[in-house]
Length: 97
Image 1: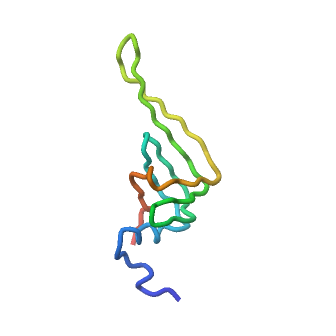
Image 2: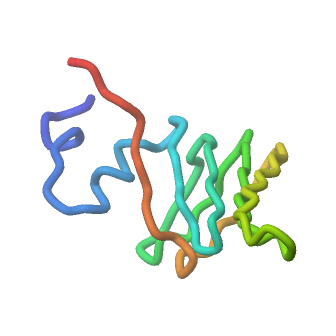
Image 3: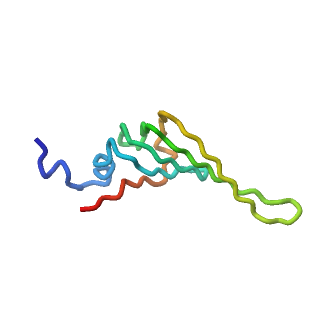
């Protein structure tokens, strides 16, 4: 039986605990972004995500015009292990109450 304490946020990692089995957004170093279902995590923010969409953004400069060219590439991964030392931001799903 769930108690009120099970859904309370007392520490920052409680937000992540409440997002288990839900889709989250993770921003990583090197302009990488992930959206996927959170299956597991630990205190270092190592995470296992399922049904992941990865978006990598890169900026190149044209040698002739010196204009910035922004390129994005996407890929889908069934399961992904994310090392916590590369995590910049974790966003839980929007909650409407």
